[in-house]
Image 1 (spheres, helix red, strand yellow):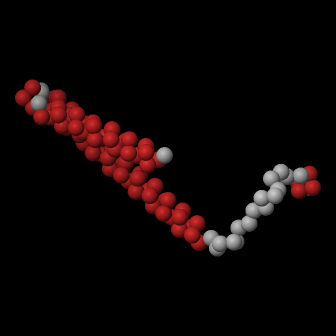
Image 2 (spheres, one colour):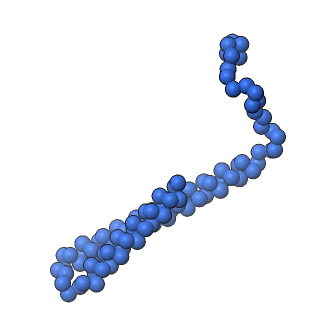
Image 3 (cartoon, rainbow, N blue to C red):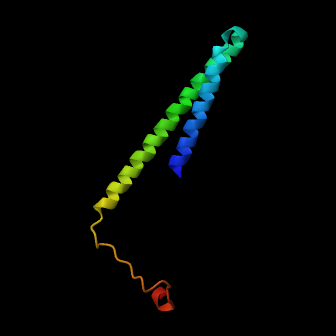
Length: 93
């Protein structure tokens, strides 16, 4: 689910970048202040992409560490009694 959200965010950022670059290509029709605003938006977009990548890398590393910890568990060291699914009064006392 998180990967899907990350991919959606990447796609949104890509579309925004494409739109902003399109605005920059219309240089003759833009005022100086419009160009500054577009340039600032492109910088913010680049910063958002960096944050997205760092978050993705962090989640990937966290998942790798989780898998490493799961692999350290000795097979058979965990046991569950599948016949008992309800706590009785004697269990609580």
